[in-house]
Image (tube, rainbow, N blue to C red; front, side, top):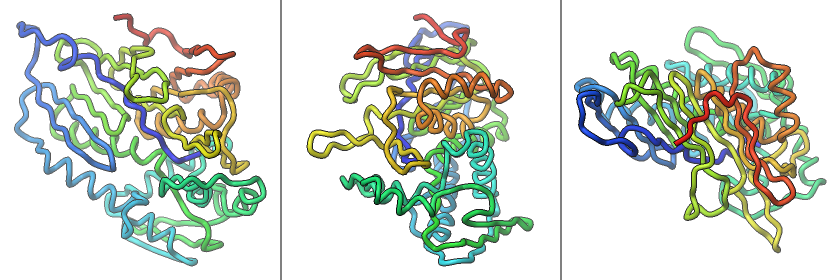
Length: 345
């Protein structure tokens, strides 16, 4: 499940759309760079004299020192390598907040989103770009160490900024890759608001948050990729018009490997340990925060089209807007839970 794929949500307003210099256009400032194995882009509406690229870099590096499985000294890596108990100081509450948000999405999705899926993702070879398909028997042998159910495989408690964990088995490991990048966007958004900006755009590895209005004093226009396997064939399937919301997309169409002519997708069902086999190609989620959008986008890719639609009807209180692209008898089709946010170019 949580071997996360980034599918770039393309900004269609501001710099990449209308660029005329008229009185309605406001000043803007951009900051861009590389982080978390991908790229990021930030657009600030108004003059910039309070935010620097170094500040953004520092925030993301501090974030990775807590939640990145690719940083050997990070808190999550320390948890994964621990035999039984571990404690550490979480001064920014990154781990605590990510843990609690993950617990909420795990419970609501009835396990479709499960951060303890690390041993399965690792066994499938996704972390190291290895091609190691699992048999059902091999997956079954790992499943006893996969469950985010509270106090089942590990327990925790908080005291001020200290976290205390006890693992029931050293093979229990966490992978927040399907929510951490979205949460990183939320962290950046909070920082930018504290600096006095109300109109801005953040994109990190395809996860997006937009606040207020763009340079044209309009809602932000964000495009959703058409799910095709080659990045050279990129096109836009839908365009969304939003403000003060986050968008995340998850899918399989560019994240898979092939062995003996068979494709193995990166989305793993944490209940079976095997890859999903339904016809859902991508799930785009709009939510008030990016961590929520990110986590549920992954959960919906595990659920598939029909279960996702049923879930949305039963969980209207979450306030999610979802766009699904799926394959039906060789044709690409789409489903929108709320068409009011679609924008026609």
